[in-house]
Length: 317
Image (tube, rainbow, N blue to C red; front, side):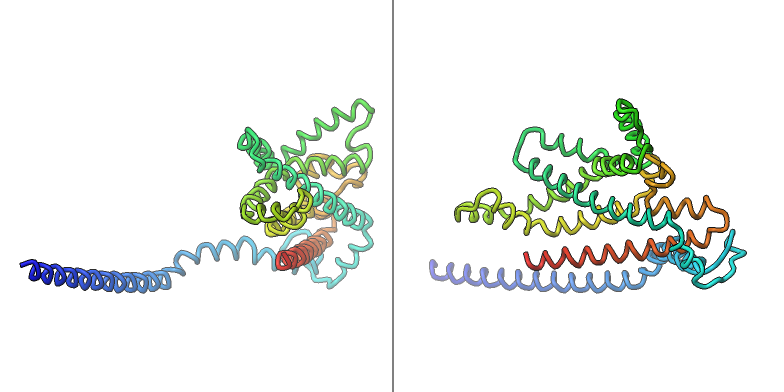
């Protein structure tokens, strides 16, 4: 009986394995059929869901962009009375001293802002990843200024900085230097918290084993920062550099609210110069549009070069 019982148990065991394999095979078949059905459904209904988005993008961006490029070669007061004049508007740009000044002013502001924002954001991120008390509260406090609009920030800091400068009988519009550093302070206050969050994510992704191995090999804090932390957070540096560079170069709201380009357009950045040319100078609408095209090309080129340079560092890291 014992031998017969063992045979029956072995038989049932084999039957159970076969049923399990059969069940798995059926599950795989159902999964494949379901995947094929989903693929067919996506291919069939994709145009229905994608068409509204593509239509909105075309109407809201592509058509205005193409029209804007065309108008940069025209003299006009409205879109309907545009007269083609070739490169005349582009030639007039380089005779406009305010544009040249705003271009260099914007370039200098961008360099200072990118360095200041990223250095401060990285330093704060390093501090808040040391396990100090109240880390979450500090992260929230540092991030909050990013939620405030540029116009509001501009007027807030105008009141604060003018109040400080009043003791020296100065204002932000006394000279372009005061406006310049006022914009740098405002930009840092707004952007540092946002970039800090990105740097914190990068620092927290560094493997602990890698840091421990470096310490065992005798690396000090400076060597850890240079040879471990910075190479490992290069993707975060790429993102933050791109965001701060483009945001600084195309700054408009804060410039308008803080100084409005005063004194005598000396603190006028490129975006505000384009705005004032288009809406503030009669007969210069085409020139303003040509400036906007050049502005777009400059921002695109700078962004591409920056991304290429930092991504090469990522590969080396």
